[in-house]
Image (cartoon, rainbow, N blue to C red; front, side):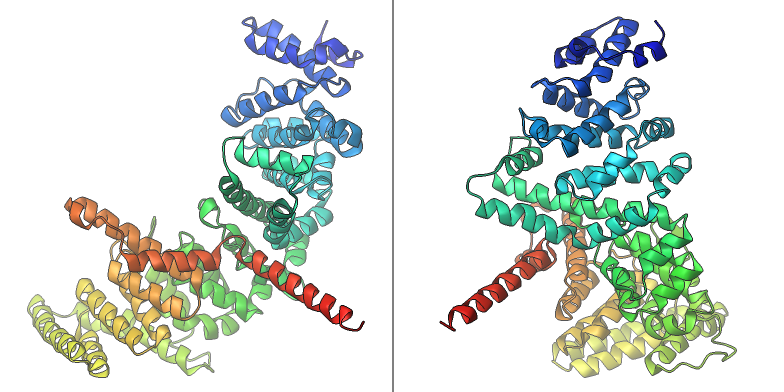
Length: 586
C-alpha cells in the first residue's frame, strides 16, 4: 500500500493509541517504524486516549532536542495532526478539560515551531498542512497567554522564510495588529493573568495548575514559577517583535501600520529591551533599525523626539545592542529629509562617540559617526538652532579634521613634550581635587585635554574619566555621562574602563535612567571580577557592597513586571477609592 492510499484510508482508532507511538520509537526497522508513526498521527486526532499527553510530551522533547531531524515532519499526517489537535482544543471544551488534554494544544504549537525553526522544507510542509489558521486562533488569545507564546514563536519561524511568508501575509492585517498588541501589553497581561490570579486563587483552577506545571516542569517552587513567568513573558514580547520584523522587512503596508499616525507603538518599542532573560534578542531596537532602513520608517521615527532620545541613550550605554542604536541614528542622519530634526537632538550625544575605534566586530565606528555628523557642517548648509549641537559639531570638526591635520605633522619629540605638560596639568588637577577645589580641578583637566595629542589615548581616557568624577560631585550628571562616554570610547576594548563605567552608572542613576545604570554597573562588576581573577587576588574577590546596592536598586526599577505591578496597584487603589466614595453616600 502506498503512502497516499494509507493517508486516504479511514483512520484506525487502535493505531492512534499512545502505546503505538512509544512502540514505534523502540522499533529498529526504519520502514516498520515509519509505518506505525504514519498510522498513529493519521488516527491520533480521532482517538480519545488519556495517555496522549505523554506521547505529546515525548514528541515535544524530540522536537526540542532534534529540530533538524526530518523523520517526523516529513510524514504526510504529521503537521495535519498537530493542526487538528489545536482545533480540537479550541472547539471542544469537553475534550480539552478531560484527562490532561489541556496540555496538548500547547505541545502541538510548540512542536510546529520547533520543527520549522531552521528547516525551510518543514516550514513548507507545515503551511501546506494548514497550521496557520489554528496558530492565528491561538494568537488571538482563545486559550491563554502560554499558547500565545508558542503560537507567535511558530508564526515567526514560518514568516522567516520567503517560501512560506506569503501564506502568512494572507493574514497580514490581523497578525500585525495582534503582534503589536501583544508586544505592548503582554508583560502587564501575564502579570495579571498569572501572578495576580495565582495569589488570589487559592483553589488553583485546572488551567492555572497546568500553567504552573509547564513553567516549573514540576521541579520548582513558587519563586521559580515567577522567574519563569517573567522569562516567558519577555519571550512572548520578543517573538512578537520578531514576527513584526518579518513583515516590516518585506511589506510597506506593514511599516505604515507599525509606525501608526501617533507613533505610540514606536514609543513602546523603545522600552522593549528584551531583558536579562533574552540577552540574545535585539527586541525593540532591532525592529526600529529595520524601520529606519525604509524612507517611510525613517520619516515616522524622526518625528518623535522621545524615540530619538531613547536611541541616543542606547548609543551611550554598554548595552550589547549599542551598535544598533548607532545604526538607527546614522540611517536617519544620512537621509536629507530626516537629518535636520535628528541632528538637533542626537548631535551632542553622538559627538561623545567619535573616537570609538572598534565596537565588537566593527572598525572605525567613530569615523563613521563623525562623517555622518559633518556632512553639511563645512559648507554651512544647515543652520543649527541648538547651541549645544553647534558646539558639539565644532568639537567633532576640531578633533577629526583640524587637530588631526596639525598633529600628523608633529615629531615624536614634540609629542613627548606634550605628554610631559599634560602629565603636569593632570597632577595639578588631582591636587586641586584632593583639596576640594572641584571647579579648579575641572579647569586643569580641560586644559590638559586641549593640549593632549589624540594619539595619547590612555592619557586622554584618564583625563575624561577624572573630569567625569568632578561633574558627579557637582551634581552635573549630563556632563558626567558625556565625559564618561568619551573615556569609554577611548578604552580598549570599548566600554571596558571600570572607573568610567561606575561613574556613568552613578550619573545615569541620578537622571533616573535605571536600565542604562544597571548595564554599566553589571559591566563594571564583571570587569572587576575578571581583573581580580587574573591577578589571583583571592582576598579581594568579594563583590563591593556599593555595586550590589546599585544593582539591586536598578533591578527593582527595571524588572519585567515592575510597570505592570505599579499599574495594577494604581488601578486597585483607584477602584478602592471609588468604592469608598460610593459607600460614603449611604
